[in-house]
Image 1 (tube, rainbow, N blue to C red):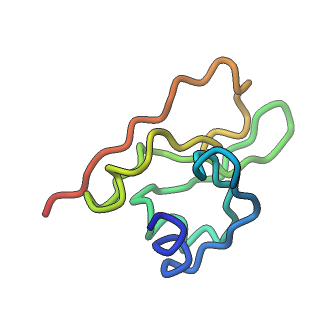
Image 2 (image 1 turned 90 degrees about the vertical axis):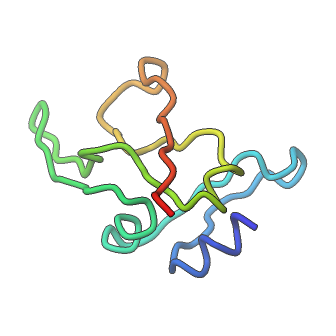
Length: 94
C-alpha cells in the first residue's frame, strides 16, 4: 500500500527491506514531489560551508497512509542520525 502510494506521488523506491515486512523503504524524488506528498516545505541551508536541503516542518500524510508508517527520516541530512528523534507524522485533516 505505501509503495503504491509513493509511486503514485512520483517518488522512486531506492531500497525496500523485503525480508522484514517492508519496514524500511528508501526513496528518491524531486523536491517538489516530496513536498507535495509529505506536506513538508524544504529549504536550503548552509552549515559549516556545506549546503543541505532540509525540512522546515514536520510531515503531514493522509490518514490512509500515515497509519502504515512508523517514522520518516532523512529530512535533516546535516544532523547526526543518532541525535535525531523520530519524526512525528501528522495526519492531514479529512
